[in-house]
Image 1 (cartoon, rainbow over the protein chains, first blue to last red):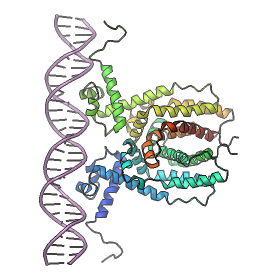
Image 2 (image 1 turned 180 degrees about the vertical axis):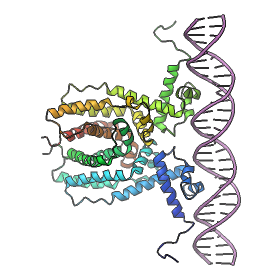
Image 3 (image 1 turned 180 degrees about the horizontal axis):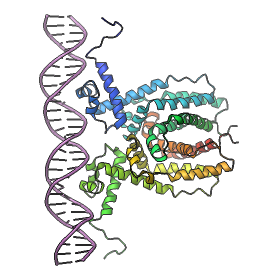
Image 4 (image 1 turned 120 degrees about the vertical axis):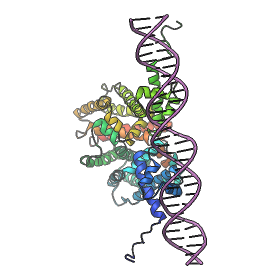
Amino acid sequence: MTAESAPKERVRDAERTRAEIIEVATHEFADQGYAGARVDEIAAKTRTTKRMIYYYFGGKEGLYLAVLEGAYRRIRALEQELDVEHLEPVEALRRLAEMTFDHHEQHPDFVRLVAIENIHYAKHLSSSSSREVLAAPALEVLSRIMERGRAAGLFRDDLDALDVHMIISAFCVFRGANRYTFNAIFDRDLFDPALRDHLRTMIGDLVVAHVTAGRS
Amino acid sequence: MTAESAPKERVRDAERTRAEIIEVATHEFADQGYAGARVDEIAAKTRTTKRMIYYYFGGKEGLYLAVLEGAYRRIRALEQELDVEHLEPVEALRRLAEMTFDHHEQHPDFVRLVAIENIHYAKHLSSSSSREVLAAPALEVLSRIMERGRAAGLFRDDLDALDVHMIISAFCVFRGANRYTFNAIFDRDLFDPALRDHLRTMIGDLVVAHVTAGRS
DNA sequence: AGGTGAACGGACCGGTTCGTACATTAGGAG
DNA sequence: CTCCTAATGTACGAACCGGTCCGTTCACCT
């Protein structure tokens, strides 16, 4: 034994193979779309063969579903980490918006997969193990912030948390999902590092202005 | 001659055939994506044959490009109609936002084609007859409104028109492009007629709150 | 050690799909 | 009327692509 801590490099390792297929497939589907992605190509970029894709996932659609669920699972895990309970409502809201912003910037594959899934009318997401995968924890955090803000008389009292979530989401998703056509038309790269802080501040300003509108 | 005004129903009509192909292809590409759309299927839904697609557009990619350019051309034509010069800045801005909202609601195919084009990194849009097709007239209208708003001391003076345009666009595009996953996750159909007025008012409120933030 | 089942590889198949060669007709010009 | 070309239809080919068949090898268990 040269290394006892290392769990021994097995030639045959189901979990290892499965995970590698998912990883490669995530990039391929995100890059090419569902119809555009090629099972042969995914297999080729793996250390294993196409046979294994069918062995583990049943087929192209099964693989896509696994990719989608994996992506949502990872995102949900990240969302659950955020803790803004200790901040005052206005600052907490801004931070939530900025964290969503960072989040979407750091996971372009996820943003693209969501766009692709929408092209397919979310039919995979609708069936899947929906109820378990879904339910964004970010929304619960937001609800709490807004409750506190309302109680303190800082926020408007006619607002729905889901509406506010949509505003933040729309901004951050748009930036990632539409950056290419936006750049082609307006010649502005929304992912230009020099623009990042500006946009990040903007979504904070925007949502704060909205929930505090009418209050001095 | 049974009808003199009717331009005679010709059996062979290049423009007619061409237009019908574009129309059908627009729906197919918007519905299935580029890779998902089938040339045979498009041809079958036309009164003509696949041969004509290759005759007029050279191939699948050429057809897609023609569809994309046509969609942008139609949208641009609509944008040029809007006239808010007679309204005061705040109302004008709200109206612009609401018109964009209506606009995206009435042209779901366009919204989907933009999403699809982004999946392809806007490579078709970037090459194409870009400079001519692009340049959204809506942005010029917006610039004028903001200039007037600033001059009247109603708007903040540190805002960029393109930023404001992005906010409006993000909201309206998100509603159309992400409605399916949003509905799957939050069980709220963003195109539910009962919700329409609420969302329409919201984008107006949002953008007005943003540009007037800090002003009493 | 040897048996057993999970994990794996590679060749292959059948339908699909983009694209084309070739034949044909409509309809206007002269 | 005739010719000539734009416009159109039919049939087919070749590559592609998702999916499967069959055989092989590894790792663990007794």
